[in-house]
Image 1: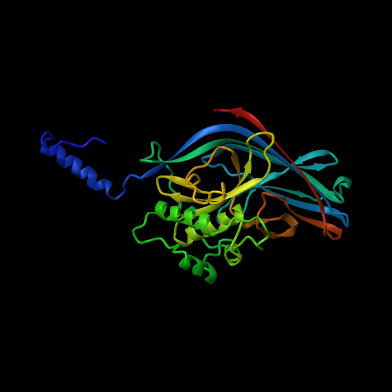
Image 2 (image 1 turned 90 degrees about the vertical axis):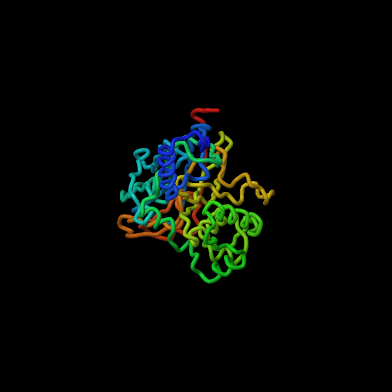
Length: 352
């Protein structure tokens, strides 16, 4: 930025510049911006086959998420289908009922189809353009849309999963000094949260009970999704909009599995990645604060999905990314199902 020379500028020009600067004080330029670089476009297909040995079906309702469109996982196309005696039958798109109003794919299938009498087979296909994301110093070159009041309220709210008002969560935050200072910038505080969780919430994939913030801090460990829940909860508790993003590895045809992390929103910057478990062998790594490689496509945002499940009424389910939510009417029970899954990834186009 060029500085004005006091000795060469007319007084009037200086007054104009001073006026412009005084107006800018109210809305200073952000210190950071996000850069997105397209990596590749990939198609992710997943199939589930459920068999219930002790159940005879007469009516199924099945629900799956519609993957979100994000700045680093964009131009999304998705569908889901149920295998019937007449072939593959498409799901329809609805909007769920929570404050987040996320897109879903559902099917209400009441027909007495012999093929579905003891279970069902469904498949989903997701195609998205995946980008690298990089956090860089300096103001953005493009305007970032602010959150609406409704969006902000949704991503600040306490929920059954993000239960940051529970006493043991507040105690953990006190002990680890996880409270934003009066003059501390959201980016700086989020960076403190990132470092604290990488160093002091051990990564472990063993069962720690329900995926709820208070439970995770009670047992004192967690894998990627549990880390994302804790980070999201702490940021929301400090009035910083945050969410947990669940993603799918989509590098090549050998890709398998999923990964989660927290994101937080900074005005005029956008949604910033706060991944506290990738490369967990190096807990002091700074590489995954604000940055992500173009290796995963977005599958789901947050938990506690609320929707009308046809004849089964209003339902709330925790996640609907790893497995489909389903309800049935028929004889017998649905205990001990046999579940077979198959995943394929195909790269449609590479940009680098």
